[in-house]
Length: 165
Image 1 (cartoon, one colour):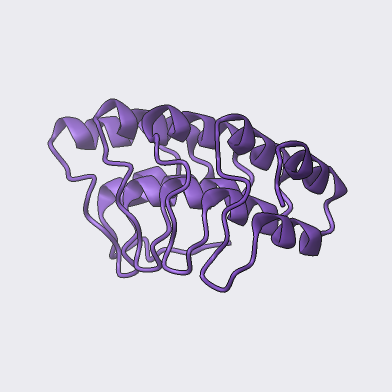
Image 2 (image 1 turned 90 degrees about the vertical axis):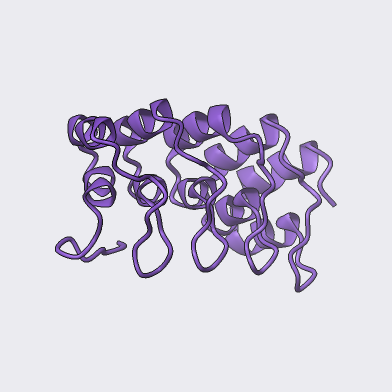
């Protein structure tokens, strides 16, 4: 599991990481920044997505937290939530962020990450919401290639039914 340096990071990041929505709200009322990052370029929203901190993310989004900020690898909050199988967080982020196919620095999308991590239910949600099932990363690997490597037959079937090649 991911670790953050709790004694060095921004209080909003820590509150989101620990899913403490009341603390997030109090800090936001005091005008804390939601764009501050840790040493890896991760914001409170990204850490909340990694941890599946639904309640904290809900508060961050109430305060119009930007969903387009990515970490130093180009990964978004949606990318991490999808790969970690946080279905409810993915739903919440999709309501706020229409860029479902945002690529990271390797050309990988949230759907590709969900497929790699065998997160079939999250992948199905992303497909239903319009994720590009024929996207390829910068090495030429397709989402279907990634799904085949994950050995999730349900995921492969869902991708094929959606027209993946």
